[in-house]
Each structure stands twice: as structure tokens, then as C-alpha cells.
Length: 180
Image 1: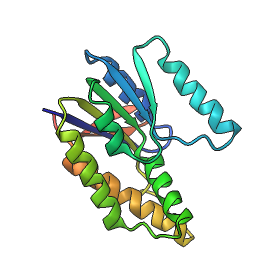
Image 2: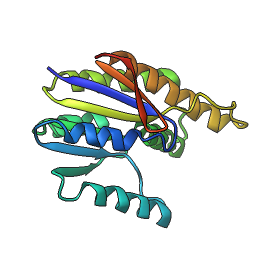
Image 3: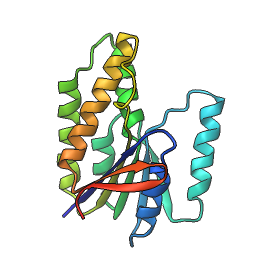
């Protein structure tokens, strides 16, 4: 039976490091499902830094900008999946919809997240989701940023509700919100 762990927090709260350490504390074959698109030199350096942190630690990296549910199905031979991060996944989905001149709604995000969890529940894996908490600041000044915040908020609510365990990271300290 799948065990789903949701980890959120602000930028630089320690959520990715915590998630990686948690995954490495578990026995089995691990895959890192990376959602970050390579968009510029600075992002390329960040990606390289993250990859360097996983070298020689038993990770296989799978680049997944859009189809997380499909990637989970394809990665069924792993024991542990670390999805880092939902924040960029939602960004990628919004960008893809915009390129097609479509509007991605909160309901559509809810449906995609629910489907993702259904796919995850069909596995025997431990799956760790990492996401940023964006809803604790000011209301964004423009409609695109507000739609992004709203869609990510819906994603976070859906995944956290359906996960077995939810953790909120603050200044590198994990606070358990749900589950033992």
C-alpha cells in the first residue's frame, strides 16, 4: 500500500533537504522526479547543485515537467519517489495552458492532483511530495500571479488532504501537521 508524504514550507525553509534525507533514511530503490524546467543559466546551476547533492547516494533522476501521473506509472519499479516540486509543476501546467491559449482553473488543478494521488495509491511506494507554501504573503498585484497562487494553493490543499502525512517546514524545522 502506498504511503504518501506531503512536505511544504516557504522558500529556503529546508523542505527539499528534509525530503531527501527522509527518502534516504528508507530502504529501497529511489527516484527523484524533478519538475524544474531549464530556463536560464542560473537555473542550470541550481539544477546541477541539486544533482550533485544526490550523486553516489542511490538516486535516479527523472525529468518530469508536466505528466507526473504518467511518470509515477513509469517509475513503478522504484520503492521511493521524491517529487520535487509541485510548485514548479503547477507553473509548468499554467505555462503550457497559456501557450495553448487555454485557462487552467482551480478545479482543473484539483482534478489533476486527485488523479495523481489515485495513481500513487495504486503503488506500493513511499511517495514524497515537496511544495512551496505561497499563501502566507500579500495578495499578488496581477491576475496571472493571483491565478498561480490560487492554483498552487488548490494543489497543496488537495495533496495534503489525501496524503498520509503532512509536514510544514519552518527555518529548517519540521512541524507535523498530519500523521504520525
